[in-house]
Length: 383
Image (cartoon, rainbow, N blue to C red; front, side, top):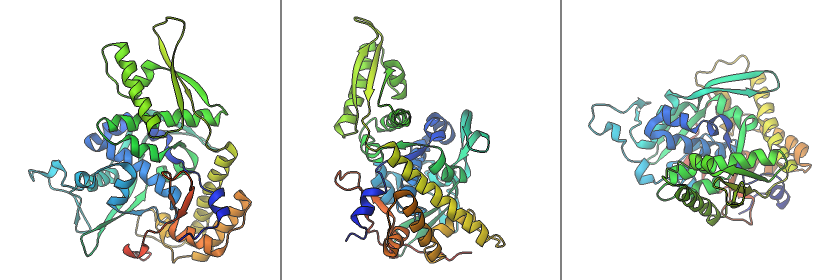
């Protein structure tokens, strides 16, 4: 059942996800900070920012199945007890009488307890000042709700760093390709390599360009290729790039030399545009203004309220029954402003209640009605 007009479907949301630039530029720092859980941390950041885009008013709740479906992880693997607790010398942490004992649960717990410590200081420039980051947090809070059948629903609170980066500090990423490229042996390194390729594409498109040339040695480093001979490095890199072609990641490449008969090889990339800069700008301005306007309203409306929980704005954002009219009016106003199109109260309410799901595997659909049964999740009252 489709709850959105054709105009709304064709105008608004692109198929591209987002990843924090600080995270994408410092993937080795995740490994140093989280060890064996580093890939899950990386996957989670890609997953949650995709949720943020397609279900802004419900991104904080998800199931293990939803996470695995989006990241190519196997439920039976990350849903089992973490090996660190196997001999019981180390006990799993407990929060609200629920153990964080599985591989995935413990990774979420670690993200709540630790920051990603950057190997070098990272400077970001905003309108007001230059900020220097030495670390970045992912989560400020995690709760696990266990249903009658033992099924878990995860409720998380993102750090302000991660939430702000969604609209102000990001590279676009092909989340469909990220999922597919991670399947099979070597998927860990291929996922990291895809993030790097998406970074190149994002920078090129922001500069109104589609083509660049990169040394093979540098690409081999990004892909974690370790070969004794140059020809083997080239062969392994070619296999990875061809795998990207096989999953229909939109790009072309060819190996070139710096001169006829030369030994130094490069890869010449071409990344055809899927969306115009105007379309990308409209989308980002919509999300930026939506979060900004709602945040300002929340700060004014609840300026004298003392909250017990962390990140009360995120909780308010995800409580559908609180200030519903304000949220709907804000959605309609900003949609009209940035997409020059009217949407009905019903469409705005459906956006608020269900969001959009990414149908990237279906090239004929931009986005569609989210059929996820919200009644299967528990809504907590505002504290």
